[in-house]
Length: 134
Image (tube, rainbow, N blue to C red; front, top):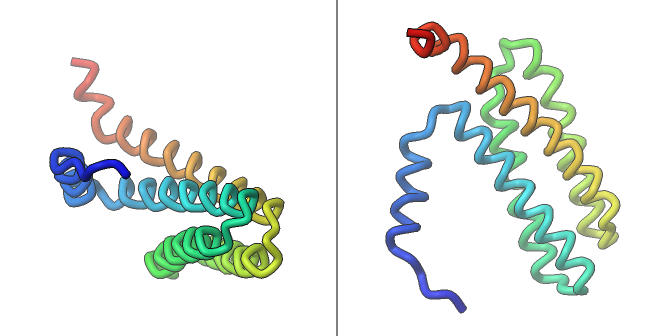
């Protein structure tokens, strides 16, 4: 077991507390991908406890993403059923120990994460682009 690194823990805590809402959403997507990858490996290793724990962590992140949607915005109305679908698929993957379902959810999460990353980059360019041309 690796000993806890206080400096790394402080860095992680600081990166979360100083992140913009957009960066926090990106962190959620990355965390979800991490737990899905661990769950897939646990299924392959026949470690049912680890699989269940990591799928539940991914589901908690998806629930958080659902709870932060602003339903006054049209895209949020389109995202909610997609998140609900992902959650249902993870329940099915957990019951059936099916890595192909986890791969499907990884694909959707990766797509959302990559799109979100582009939105953050475009927003930064719009906000700071003129200042960088000085």
